[in-house]
Length: 205
Ligand code: AMP
Image 1 (tube, rainbow, N blue to C red):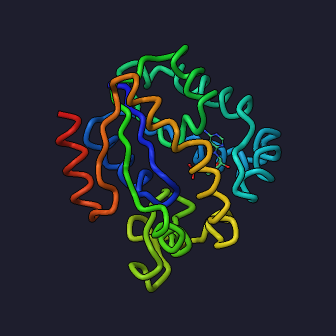
Image 2: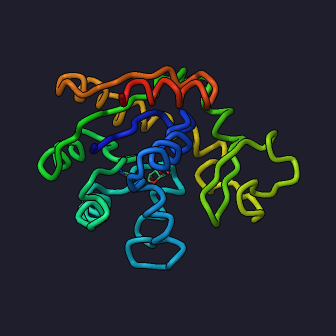
């Protein structure tokens, strides 16, 4: 099954993506994670992407599309995959349609006005990718691997507002795009993590 998970920054799509991939044994392809890995590795692509990411802007399509094409072409994607953070605009959705068939586009519906606080309190593990909120990790350590949690550069409040704006302008219209393709499944993303996960599993069955 080829799945897309869509939702605003802070909608919980990364958290749900990890759970879905574990349950279904499919690779989790997050373009944000791929870009952050390029930055950490100091690649040319990482250097180019960083300025856009730090400003909360979309990285230019040609960079992200090249990254995505290479990743979905790998062997572990033959039996299905989950895309998290791609496509982010209509041009990317069209390119994706030309490469693979999408079976389900999961949309985590959220109240955009409530997301800025959620994102600003997010803490992530630089080692294993675990994500939580500051209030859930008072010791600042990752629950999964013990590493010190960090604040993503683009989760700083001044950048978050821009990311939400970019989402509303560029990515939100894709909900209608996938609705028209007949693959859209909407889930209430304001519920608890477990409730959202149960709703997603019901939809995937
Ligand atoms: P994410 O981890 O999905 O929130 O992505 C973090 C940042 O990476 C975004 O704010 C963008 O700057 C960049 N990014 C990730 N995926 C894409 C994409 N499909 N197209 C353009 N930029 C992206």
